[in-house]
Structures are given as structure tokens and as C-alpha cells.
Amino acid sequence: MTAATQDIILQVTGLGKRFGGVDAVANVDLDVYRHETLAIIGPNGAGKTTFYNLLSGRMHPSSGRIVYEGRDITGMPPHEISRLGISRSFQINNIFEEMTVRENVEVAVTALRGEGRRWHNVASRNRDVQADADALLERLSLSELADQRAGVISYGDKRLVEIAVVLATRPKLVLLDEPTAGMTPDETQRVMQLVKSLGQSGDYTFLITEHDMNVVFGLADRILVMHRGQKLVLGTPEEVRAHPEVRRAYLGTADEEMAP
Ligand SMILES: Nc1ncnc2c1ncn2[C@@H]1O[C@H](COP(=O)(O)OP(=O)(O)OP(=O)(O)O)[C@@H](O)[C@H]1O
Image (tube, rainbow, N blue to C red; front, side):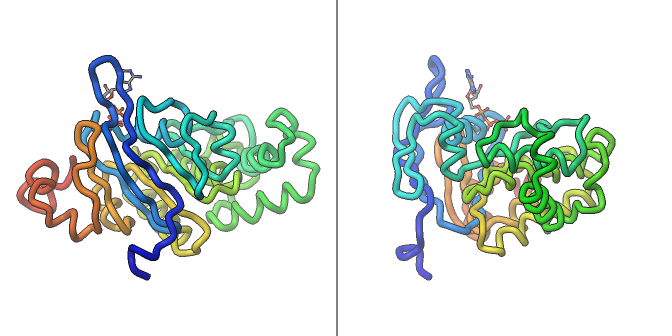
């Protein structure tokens, strides 16, 4: 499939967010193709988090337009955007530590069904919810931890549970915020394999911010490099790696020095 015929799930045009005198995001144009994994990189303050906040509705843009599946979602509240199929993970764990791993996922499944998060006791008696939660836990290789209290499992497993919670809302477009931050090398590998296989399943489109360049170059179909709120480069990993400005600004002289 050529780029021209690829199905665009998200179209961002002239997107900007200004805080006082700072353009946190400045005039960004971006087409995201359905089922691709697109990494967004850039140094601290480049505008990655603000970009996510704009896409997920947590912030209103100062300018520009966001079109998702042909529908203008600019300025929509987060819950509506989420309902349409855009879901986001956070850098900080966002799970209920006193509940079991399965209950955490059940709560998210229940929320999707419009029954509200507070009804988790009812949800746990609901077979459909349990089946959905168990299927998801199996997909993420978390079945063995299903009955563990989320508060006692490892940091890496908590991050995986968080991804399960995000996927429980049945998103089509998933925004992952530094999914491997703080992880051991083994945990990082596990997340990489997981995101790779979920990406290959054809069920999801991933945007991923990440500081670990091995993860970025190992996972991404395309990479967006941001700098001071602007789109510096957008291309395949090979194109980004070879781009003189990116090499100068972020990659150093050797590929080993790729930390932004
Ligand atoms: N709520 C806010 N009020 C004022 N300035 C903000 C706000 N949020 C972000 N900024 C500024 O916008 C710019 C972009 O910040 P942002 O957090 O989006 O960058 P980032 O690429 O996510 O950085 P990091 O990698 O550190 O998370 C920075 O100069 C930041 O100080």
C-alpha cells in the first residue's frame, strides 16, 4: 500500500497550543495511518505531552484542527474522545492498588459499558465482563497475576496492567506515554514484544512517546521528531536516523548516543 492510498485514522492540521509566550505545540501537521506505530520523540519540553493533551481532549488547542476517523474532534471533552476510540496511558500508574489485577480490568470494561466505575462489585458478578477481562489478561500474558492485588505486583507488571486497562476501553487509537520508563531491561523487552504483537494484530494504531531510543527504533513504523513544539522531521526510522538535523540535535555522532 502506498502512502497516498493508506487509510488515515487521525489528521492533525496546524495544531498549536500557546502558554503565555511559549508555543508548546506550534503549527503541527500530522497524518496518522491506521494500524501503524508512530513514535514521537524530542528533548524535554519539545511538546510531546502537550500534543497528547490536545489529542485526548485534556487541553483545548489555541489553533488548528484534529480530525479522527473523518470527524472533527477539536475541543471535544476527554470522555467523548475516549468513547470514540482514542485512549491514553499515563507515565504514572493509574490503577487501583487495593483491587486485584482482574478487578482493575473489569472496572475498565464496565466503564466502557456505561455502568460507571463505582459498580465494580456488580461487574465482577457479570460473566461477560469477566470473560472480556480474562481474554485481555491472557492477551497481555497477565493471567497468572489475575487474582493478585495490584498493589503487590512488580512495577513492570503494573505498567502492563495499566495497558490492559487502556485496552479494556476498546480503543482504536492508543496513546502510550513512555511505556517503558523506569523498567528493567527485561521488563522493557516484554513491553516491546507486547506492543509489537498488538500492533501486528491489526486491532490498534499506536502513538508512543518514549525516551529509550532502542524501543523507539525497535517498534516504530514512523517517527515524529519534535523540537520546541514544532515538527522537525517525520519519517521512517531509517530516514530519521539519517537526517542531518536530527543527528546533530539528538543522535550525537554515534548511533549509541541516541538519547535525546
Ligand atoms: N500547563 C502549562 N503551562 C505553561 N507552560 C506549559 C504547560 N505545559 C507545558 N508547558 C510548556 O510547554 C513546553 C512543552 O512542554 P511538554 O511538557 O509538552 O514537553 P514534553 O516534550 O512532553 O517534555 P517531557 O519530555 O519533559 O515530558 C515546555 O516549555 C513547557 O514548559
